[in-house]
Amino acid sequence: MSTPPFSIVSFSREHPKKGFCCGAEILDRYFAEHAGQDIKKKISKCFVAIDNEQLRVAGFYTLSAAQIPLTSLPELLAKKMPRYDAIPASKIGRLAIDKRYQGLGLGSVLIADALKKSSDASMGVYAVLVDAKDDNATAFYQHHGFIPCLGKPQTLFLPLGTIGKL
Ligand SMILES: CC(C)(COP(=O)(O)OP(=O)(O)OC[C@H]1O[C@@H](n2cnc3c(N)ncnc32)[C@H](O)[C@@H]1OP(=O)(O)O)[C@@H](O)C(=O)NCCC(=O)NCCS
Image (tube, rainbow, N blue to C red; front, side, top):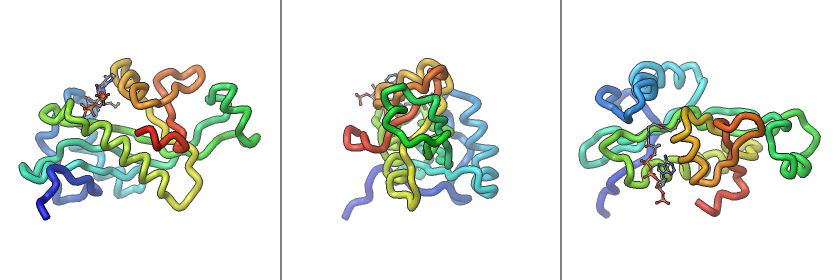
């Protein structure tokens, strides 16, 4: 069996942290300096897409537990929910693809991976939540079906019931 070009695995010490460059310095710095600490403190998990040929990190995302206030859901959706203050969710805190690998579909693959992991979690998770860092990222998430929260257009969510569409 041949080795796949990319593998998605949990970020660990043996993965190179330096040299990752997605074009957003804040995300590059997070990956190099803070991702390991957040994992250690159980603030988030971090998953990396590895280029199996170059043995490089091609992309990463973080995943944490989260909540969506019921008041952030569009009215039609909120009406269908139980009368809780908030709905359980998981959150992609950060997502980035190294410039050398952008435009190859890896961003979509990492989102699909986050949806699958959230769906498989041994707890109730209604949707995956994201905080888009700018309009470009918002457009990227909307392209994948994410819905803006009421009054917070850069916070978006995707109900796991719609996972089949990806
Ligand atoms: C945004 C980012 C994650 C996209 O990753 P990518 O691997 O280059 O994107 P993909 O190749 O997976 O694109 C998948 C689809 O999204 C679309 N897409 C990509 N960027 C888009 C954008 N800014 N707006 C709308 N659609 C976009 C592509 O056209 C493609 O569409 P298709 O499948 O219908 O052909 C990547 O460019 C990146 O890391 N940018 C810097 C950091 C950043 O902005 N992170 C966002 C999270 S805050």
